[in-house]
Image 1 (cartoon, rainbow, N blue to C red):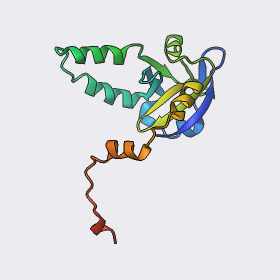
Image 2 (cartoon, rainbow, N blue to C red):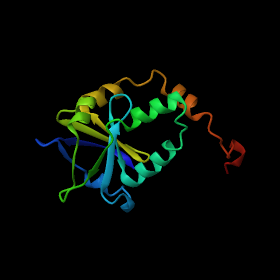
Image 3 (cartoon, rainbow, N blue to C red):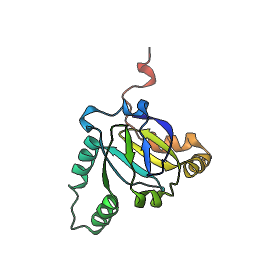
Length: 155
């Protein structure tokens, strides 16, 4: 999934899932999702099939290790199952909206296998603080990737 979509909450705390985003979600999700707390003050919306895969890995953690237990508790804290209604709307839990400071304007930021749900102004503030040297950050994060092609391989 990929894309950035602006949405508005209606008076009942529902959003309409943009058609361009819905097209990217696998049929295996069956129009079901799980939403939970994310990092940096956002929520994360997982298509149901992705949630199953994600939690399979989390459920393999050794719960006799304190940090693992703490992570699992925080990860599952507030996790809520959602389903699209006949008008492609999702009813977002008020407790999670409060956590993310979401009132009306929302940004859905889709990448990889998840959709981050942001308060629009929080999202804009986060992205306005671009790292001073994005190239240096890219090298730090991506520079350790194993590259199979070298300059000699390019025709």
